[in-house]
Image (cartoon, rainbow, N blue to C red; front, side):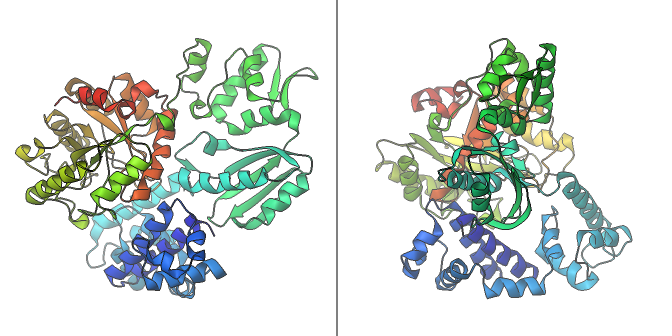
Length: 571
């Protein structure tokens, strides 16, 4: 089992226990364990192979959970989860995906109304049964109906991190076969969309059966859904479905272009081919029966008088015109990132100390970081008031002495309160090196109030950046209703940065708004929002989002040297 599988296992235990009303500390233990395992750079199986004591060295892993990890790795299941699944139907767990409906309410709905599916819940909300429950009312019923509608719109999609990791593992294993010459992820995962409905993998092989046999017997595969001579569909253990297509070596480039998409991009490319008397499909670019191009994507694009276009840009959002005019951006790369300006420590809800986070940042080659623990409004994360924050900054300044090669800024992730005031007074914020202002609560307020909050923050002389601006959670929670042109104009006028939060569940700003922010000349910062030393690993997802937005190195402030970065700060 991979780290993601083990992490998902314990996350589900936490969900089910929470629905049952288990002790909150017990629930939190499973959630913390899940996050620790998901963030590990080393396979959990390798750590477990060194003995149970090695597992106990991991943060948040106690004896009970360590023992369950061993059982899970050895058998692929734990008796605890099997028992919980019998007690709580899967449809009840799915109710947790509805924004604003927590485990306590789900427990009440399950036990008092005996609803076990989203369809049953929708009916109960429509016929008044939900509104009549104690502590619910018409407003909650409406929230439930809106949430179910939102889930129906987004469908069963997986975060790019959930989709890409197993796909890349399978591609790497395919390439180990002597018969496989080329293999790659295609589809929306190759375009690095923030979520994927399914996966596409292409391969060229002298023995298609060998490639399909490997996939059929792969440890990440739960079930083979269909198998033909050149195409196979499987369902992975994570639940996402994958298509493997074995194509001729001479058609690999055409197939990659075709199956990478997007549909809108490909329509334009086919139209360009038709205007030149050519026909384009997954097998190649043809003039009558003659193959004009097929082996590489570069050949395909060249034949329609275009340079090769990076997959992340293939959404028909102006990339064709830029390619025609020779204006394609030189997209940002992960190696360009020099700083990370959003992270948490044990002072609030992080799992590592200031010193440990600094060491981990240095090990990744970063040159500067900002420690930005939560302000006091976030009580569930033990947010900092003015007194605790100043003591925390004093500790950061002491740690600086041990890091001559790493700049460590005294920062704060400061909430923008529902009444549009900042969560900490100006005299405190004035002492910070870096203030990132965020919306955590009141995301459903009317646009007028949301904008008042954001604009007040942007105009505050001590605020450096707006973090995860919309507050959305990908495929789970829509963001606040924001007038982005007004926000971006104010940010540009006041020298305030905009963040792309790199955590795969946020990726906020999204690609469209990040591109718009670039047009306003706003410096973008890509931050991990790391809550552990392994939390820095998600930076690549922020870079993917930036690439989809067409951002270059010069558009992203934390690619600059620290001295150049400091000059951008209006303070």
